Structure formats: C-alpha cells, structure tokens
Image 1 (tube, one colour):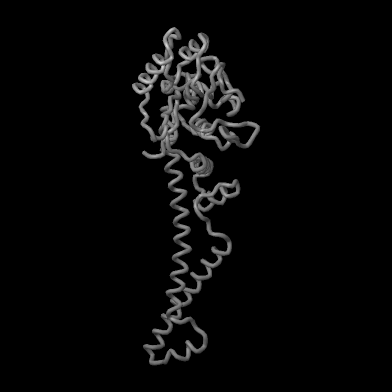
Image 2 (cartoon, one colour):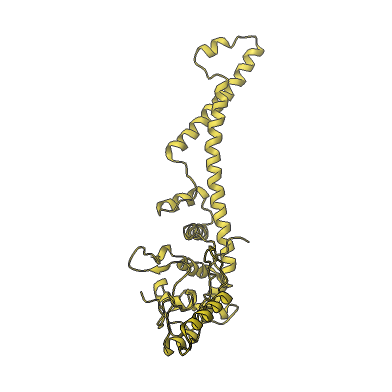
Length: 307
C-alpha cells in the first residue's frame, strides 16, 4: 500500500494504518481492527452527517463532507483509497502526518520545494549552510541553531503531537472502541435485546464484554436460589413447630439444611449475581461511550469517550 501520497518523503500515522491483505505489520493492522475504520463506521451512524451525504454535501456538515466525502457510497477500502481534495489518497490526506524526512539529510532544490509546498512537519528545521565557510564556523553556527530550536532536554523522551488534518485522541483502545461500536449497533438493530443477549451475540464474534457466566455457573445460581428458598420455607415451618412446642432436633437429624447453610448459599448467590451485575454495568458503559463518540464524530473529533 502506497502511503507517500506522491511525495519523495514517507508519511506515517499516529495510529496504525489499515491493511487489506496482511493481518498486521509494524505500522499497519487488518482494516476491521483499525482505528480509522472505526472512525469511518461511527461517522456512518451519525444521522446528521447521513443527511448531508444524501444531499451531496449540502447541509450542516458540508465542511466535513468536503474532506470525508460520502461514507455511505462505498465500502471502507474504496473510501480509504479514494481520491482526496489534493488529488492523493484520501486516508493519507485525512489522517497521515505531514511529509517528513526520517533522518538528518541534505535536500536537493526539488526536495526542499516539495517539503514546503506539501506542508512540512513543523518539527523539521530547514537550514541553509554556505559551504564557503570553514567547517569550524559551520559547526559552531549549527550547534547554536540546534540549541535555539531544539526544545527537548538531554534524557527527555521525544513526544510528538499529531499534526494530521484530523488527529486521534491521544489515549485510545481500538479493541474497546470496536466493542462499543458493536454494542451500539446491536441496540439499534434490536432495542429490546437484553444486555445478556448482547454479550452472547458479541461473544460469538470473538468480542468479550466483561466476564459472562457459563452454563455451569448459571445452573449453580438457579440451584442455590432454589435451595435457599427451600431453607426459608423450612425455617418458617420450624418456627411454627417451635410455637407448637415440638423439638427441632429430629428434623435436623433427618438431613434437613442447617441454619449456617443459609449464609453459604447467600454468599454463593451474591458472588454470581455480582458477576452478572458487573457484566450489565460493562455493557451499559460501552453503550454510553458509543453515544459520546457518536456525538463528537461529525465535529471531526475521534474517539472522544468522555462527555
């Protein structure tokens, strides 16, 4: 996949770019797991932007449309590789960092011109070095220029902010956002679907939201609830027997549940129900995150997960 966008210099992305053949490389990942695919997918779910697309760019989101185009017209691969306003690749145009040399190098006239015209990365410093001067003079001058322009101190880590036209939020988890997207889509497709049904549906696609009770645990929960209900009934019956002056010793000797069994049952039930409650909370949280992302995506911001 060509990422140079007709440039002598390479371009890179803050997030990995989408791959359509290989599953993963150092700089790319399979498109369905890619953060930019998720951006495109959320934008497709935005009703306001959908109306702008149906009107060929007219409407509230016309400015965003000029860059992103009609996200409903084609599949992701076609959209990503489509023609951008600058004549290059749409994906690189929207999300790649400005063209930038990957090493300290001398530039030809054409390279310097290209770097400036294509919108150079502001972390790149252009320096004119008159070779008629002595090496010592040049070295002294270069040292001063570097000291004046290089803000990073010795030992400090290199941190580069994104200068892409549309940059990603610094903290994002593509897998977590994909789960939020799929939860939202399931809710749209079937508003009456329970959280438990949603997690089962996602699980079939290899997406996990929290820890779901397995069949054995579900059976144990039902069994413990039934046993506790039986114990409560027996306790009421025993109280009546006591009221009538009949000893309980005989009933316990016959293998009935002892009073301390109730606490064990309650503990077991509480642990399993807490697990189910945590699952419900996890799905609810994913749906809330999806709504927040959706509310901001048509403003060119992604992925905004906190309202």
